[in-house]
Image 1 (tube, rainbow, N blue to C red):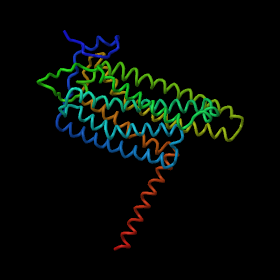
Image 2 (cartoon, one colour):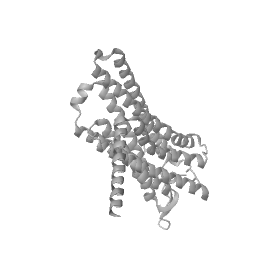
Image 3 (cartoon, rainbow, N blue to C red):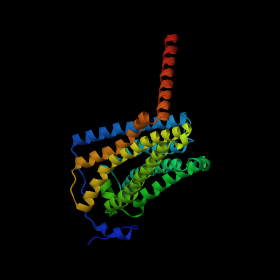
Length: 334
């Protein structure tokens, strides 16, 4: 009879602690090479693309605007996915021998960054809704200190929710005084009841539904205002046209997040609830897709957000101009 070793776990989920552990997903050497190569490419795209986003927003001084402040928060989360989460994802795929709690911490860091992305997306949705719902009151009430407080709450809550397994909601620690290490594997240390019931259903699925509702309400309000003609004032009409264009772009970022993350979570739910054996290749494709989401957002901004698009062009012009000047100086010296 199995024993519960959880220090913290909701009563409704306690019975799931005795579930049969999910077996490790093995890959052939050639599959490992392909998977690792793709992860390296995705990591490079995440880092370069999101560094460009942060640079662009900072250079065009849009950081003081609420939405772009949250866009930077999302870009930082996506940058850390490439710099930290992707390397850790490769490590926690059965390739490194660590202590149980070391492996658990690495796995929790990956979850924290996912939560930070979700919370930043939710902050963006709430911000756009409030801005259109009552523009005058919003402009008068929101200050820079409120922005940084909101960003701090996003990241603090992400850390709290993502690190919960460290406080006991994890699989049974089978290490002993004679065998103190394990081959680090995400699914050997993170309990699937936490991943499915809490991380996915409570912390990702629920906020996603809320964001979709907010965007639907937002588009409905904008459409109503444009149909009314907003008192035939060109200035007001222009405001709502700009809001709709930006809302379309940010809603696309949300849709891409859902498309990229949903397959992996659905596979986890199928294994947890239905005991369906999902092929290892499908699991790894789901992981790659979830990581690729962090590399896609900078491309969306480049095509869909005019302010960031112009900042991209300005940065590229500065880089090419400085390169040309350097070449001219080198030719003069020779």
